[in-house]
Length: 163
Image 1 (cartoon, rainbow, N blue to C red):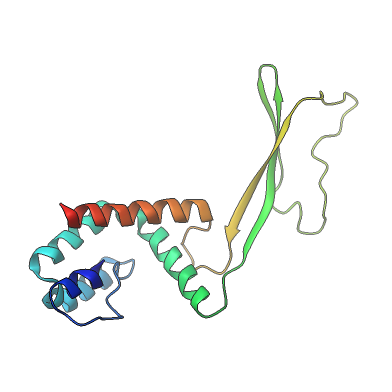
Image 2 (cartoon, rainbow, N blue to C red):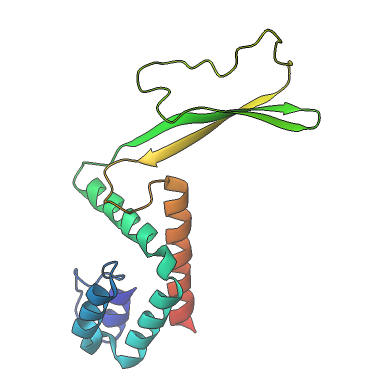
């Protein structure tokens, strides 16, 4: 968005003008000050406001940026998945059996129930978790959360600029 704003003001394409700039306020403020002449004071203020409004989504945007950058170099970050729980859909709700996070580290199977009483023959669901490996410390790992929050951030930026 920042590159498009600068281009609409007559600036040449700038490949380094990608917003948001860093996770910390200091890194952001340094870049905003650097690019304000290209963006204009009004749009710089809009960018600062929208960043503040959506600051809780910045780690997700940084995660998607890291994922995107790895793809460009043919080193797409790997995703891992594992079963987290088994849920049986019984008459009065669900009965959930948690699966330890390391259950499949050493084995390809996990016995989630053992008792003399058999489980009822009812529909069941396997709850899975997927994580992107190789992202920086403190960044979210869930692809669904990363994408949802990054899309919400971008929509917020577009809405603020169009207003």
